[in-house]
View 1: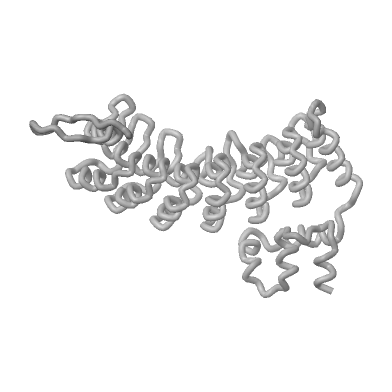
View 2: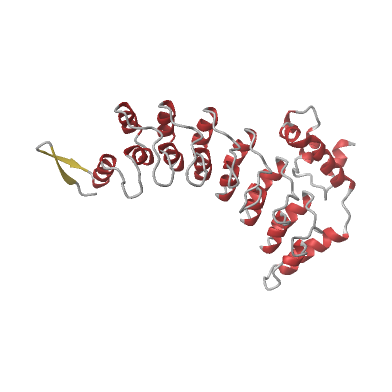
Length: 312
């Protein structure tokens, strides 16, 4: 059992748990070293009651610390949805930017707080804030939050948004070897051959000798012949010293020696014609279920004939 600490207050002795004492102290004393106000600390600790009291006493709801972080940034970075709502109702700027130009939605996406993400979107958060660095979708990809990515994409997140360091969200997911996130992006219509300094996601997958990711990208139409700014094709980037080199090389060899089937060509063409909006509505279209599965790269892949049999 945790020991209690005695706190002298108003001439009396009050018993508190050590953690509670520390939290109460931090709420009373701003973190002057980094410029955090009481609102910042309360937002981080989930004390929406203290936020309401501070705002009622005149505390500036959009106060920034030395890094340009507002209390709303702090609440979203820690997944404190009630605090975020309290701040928004008090007039917090839903699109405030910190020193890195990140918005509260960026922080909520990185945290993986679905409730915070939905709250911010409902309150008018910009899904594609102007910047040359990461967007909320990039942040979700960097943290492997594919569930959050689905929400952001449904709300209109740009799949080809370019970050000056990371490239597109697909580049981010591929560089991390996050197959689930890559699938989410590709199924949503991300350009599999988008380039960053002439490198595609397939180049990044090849660098990692990730046979699963290499196969997935090639199935979605990745161009194995594209060269980066040093003239290298994805296959040229395979690490020969790794044990899975032969398996990865075999995958490239198979795709290079086998032309795309008519089923593959049709699927890629239809998806290209549908575009991002069309792909997001495939499930609502009046199409046979096998065709929907086929268009969304379901179990009936291009290497099988089950789709063809079910449609004929």
